[in-house]
Image 1: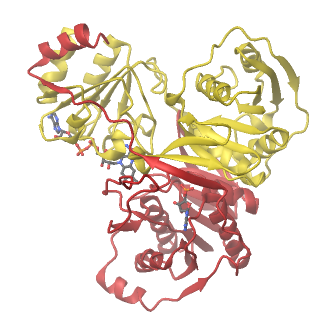
Image 2 (image 1 turned 45 degrees about the horizontal axis):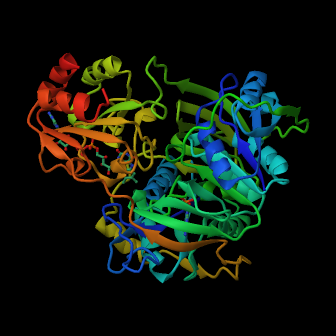
Image 3 (image 1 turned 30 degrees about the vertical axis):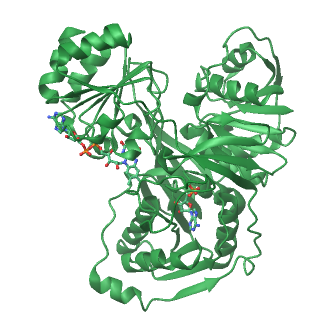
Length: 309
Length: 249
Ligand SMILES: Cc1cc2nc3c(=O)[nH]c(=O)nc-3n(C[C@H](O)[C@H](O)[C@H](O)COP(=O)(O)OP(=O)(O)OC[C@H]3O[C@@H](n4cnc5c(N)ncnc54)[C@H](O)[C@@H]3O)c2cc1C
Ligand SMILES: Nc1ncnc2c1ncn2[C@@H]1O[C@H](COP(=O)(O)O)[C@@H](O)[C@H]1O
């Protein structure tokens, strides 16, 4: 079996999500190649070549791939992927944007968000906001899948010595261009990678009050997340939303503050190892998944918690 | 400018879906069905474009069994001008839906296609990207802002790192995220008016699309359950548990 893993990166650093995808590839078993599409991304290719268990890295280095536009990267993935039995990417916004487009170009019915490999053609994935786990079997000759990173371990970033090969043919989009970005800047760990996440919901009342959570997070080395309600209300930016249609996290510790625990929120965090809920409503559904529930007013409890950790 | 909007009938987002006892599929008997929330946002966006005078006609499309005409009627009540129902009882997958939408787009020649980023039943997040691939159109996925100007559309996209803006030439496919707009409710007079708006029916065969599933459902199961936790009396007890029992801080 030959497996193509699409690298997730920012042209400088290989995103750790790629290591989880490599773990899923290892579970399938076979010869693994990583495709790095980007601009001035030689360093990423080197990092990819060091990942344990990789036999080859293919680099497509061109201005056309600098911003991961699907109109450029998908035809590249389809071209390179034509020779592979499996094409895998992380279920990040980049993977979700590019891979379905490549899959359609290859006339393959893609499988989104796999959480386990049952056999070479059978996989598990959550549906209905994670209320149900489906086992699905692909009858396409080629399998194209995104991988839920929290469901797989990280392959070792070091120890490999794959060969690096340049891919010459460029697919430059003519109907789409990058026009700008506003990236969140933070010294705190990324939500997806953090081992502790502190999240706030509508109960926080406003953006300024999130300062309380940032203080807790900084003491614990944690990332800060939010519910949809907190994002919609403008307390915090969209990239902090945890849930069915936001980010999926599974840290060692998840602290939900002023979050009621709607199924769409639970879908994004209920695989966390330990869950703490702080909510003044003892009937709040978040308590049904919390290992430790504290019924309290968050405006008293959070500062006290911060002072005692 | 003509806008095509794809709307899907799904289990209402408030319903907690469970597997059937025999594990063959989810229990869908007597559950409330609605228009997929992301599709509702797609319809709203199209209607706002029409209100601004940018769009001249809105065509709503849905694929599935007979009852999805209810969701098409909702789209008509919200402001779509006409509807197309592709009727089939088959279990549809994103690539199949994308192929049918492509056949409809070839006929209708829309300038913009707006769809949801994700159906909340299958959680696929594929169809818009696939339709864009099949039609060769550019794609603006996970949109939180859409601005049309001179034959192009600027789409602000919600991405993991923050926001990204892309400029696409028309025709293009846009998929909606939650923050794009807040959908309105259909008024009673508009619901009445929608009953008289045109709704065409087609079959997958009319569109030349084979509906056979290439990903088969082997079975379903409930997710791993968490064991019941405890309530702690105060912050001291919480800190003590986290330090000494869970050992996570
Ligand atoms: C299509 C769709 C997709 C969605 N996707 C997501 C998603 O990805 N992520 C997500 O989170 N949601 C999502 N939602 C929204 C979800 O259904 C809920 O509306 C949302 O999670 C509620 O956020 P919340 O818990 O912050 O707010 P609320 O439900 O309003 O809860 C606020 C909580 O704060 C508590 N509280 C208030 N004041 C205090 C105080 N002083 N001290 C202590 N506690 C206090 C209250 O008791 C209450 O439990 C989605 C919904 C739809 C329809
Ligand atoms: N059966 C369908 N009928 C109409 N539109 C659909 C259908 N299935 C998917 N779509 C569209 O594709 C979007 C994404 O769906 P999915 O790829 O299944 O997550 C939905 O929000 C709809 O706009």
